[in-house]
Length: 464
Image 1 (cartoon, rainbow, N blue to C red):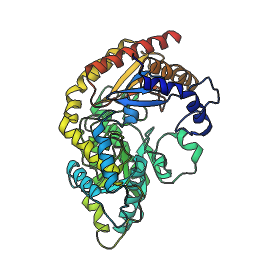
Image 2 (image 1 turned 90 degrees about the vertical axis):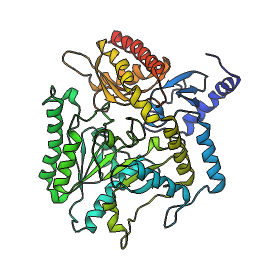
Image 3 (image 1 turned 120 degrees about the vertical axis):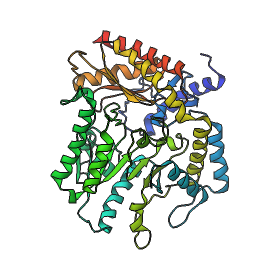
Image 4 (image 1 turned 180 degrees about the horizontal axis):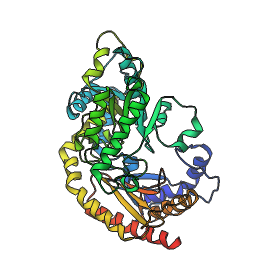
């Protein structure tokens, strides 16, 4: 790879930046090291499906930043849209006022959303959207004569965000323990990990019925008059991409209707093309009461999230009641302008169609890795996949906590990065490698990912 003068300058300045990062930058979800020999990876540039670090090395962005950069890096028209809007109206809040970009984007999102999901409440990110949805569910039932309906149900190992309410919904005990006590009244049911199913593991439809019925069981156990909502991702991210079994979501919809419980589709990751549709609920044929979304709405070029609710849920607030909730930067004019231009790109370049046309090739390419003894399962949909690594393929024996730590963070993460692939090796649940590349990727990029993964996973197995 050719190193440009710009890259040399950046590399030359990296020693100062490395020290400044150690002294001042508190990174998110990161284990910090005071060892000056441990370099903090510093990304300085992106173009298309690639990113470059401060030393001039190029990597394929196999995670779209963080499930975000759908349209790819370096889209100048998105930067130009931000600059144009900032020059006209850089900021104004949505507190009893409106501005054109928020109005236009709300109308556009309502047009994409299924059914009567016509009311768009803007936030600055996904966790805030989830927080907003729980608060709306509680206040809605209070205003409609069912004040005891306040509890929420989510799935084991699911991740729904870091604010206190969203974290209470999250099904990862280790992530919650440092911040307890959290918001009460959140309960967990099994997820849709059929690879490790204890019942109906050989029958996806029966497994889907079984998993959905656990939701009804939880509602009935807690009392339907106390349960406000069920929060589910279309494809559960944490744990390594669990798609829904056939019939799962339609059955959940029936259960929620039977008990007057709201169904919240948490699409912070899954919306905006990740699964080949603007909203993933369309892919799996269900109508939620609320959609939460963020990330890909702007392809990450500016922060923005939203809670999209049905007309029914807005009705109590249409005249006499206030939803006393909001964010200073929710629906920010610049972010909304970027989102509008990003959605223009989606339509002009047919990104959803591109994902649907190429997802079969992505799956087939990743499934080649199942010939490796360390690869237990390859699962996902669209451009959203998890590869579970195992100790023993026949028994599906997984790694201990200590072994996972050594394998994932001690070897796989740095080795994959060294091989030119930025992705995610994680153990929220069982150890997995997650892949969610930009929606503009093609077969050549899939082949590169498979080759890098094959080389690194082969070395990992040899080390074991």
